[in-house]
Length: 145
Image (cartoon, rainbow, N blue to C red; front, top):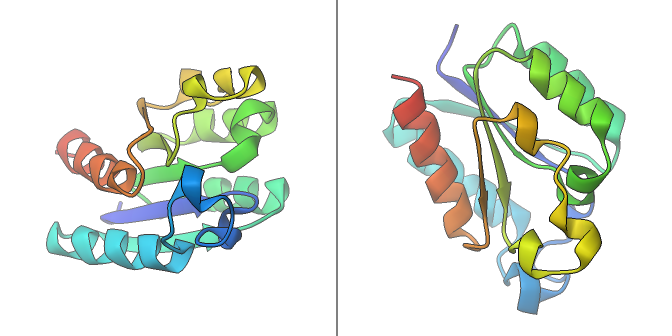
């Protein structure tokens, strides 16, 4: 298996930078991905990124990653709270899995307090803004040894 990380970004994350910057920050998704990819390269990882507003695209990417990736870092957006299908797909992936959120869902609306993914990932990182990506990469590197 390669030292590839599949970085998945769910619905509406393509709107980062302009969508609720007081909650999600002012950086765009492209900026987050570029920084994550640069740091991953230093650690010897390659990154494949997919953003989709469609649940099925994310599931298909997870299925394909079973043959190519060592880890998945996923910010599933609102699908975090609703998608058992995404959880099932992640459960089939044998590598490291890290769920991330820019904001802290537990400090927000009650419907955001539940993660359908939490039970099938190695860990969840939330509430640290852009640093959530750094912490996820650190977790991948440490767990992939």
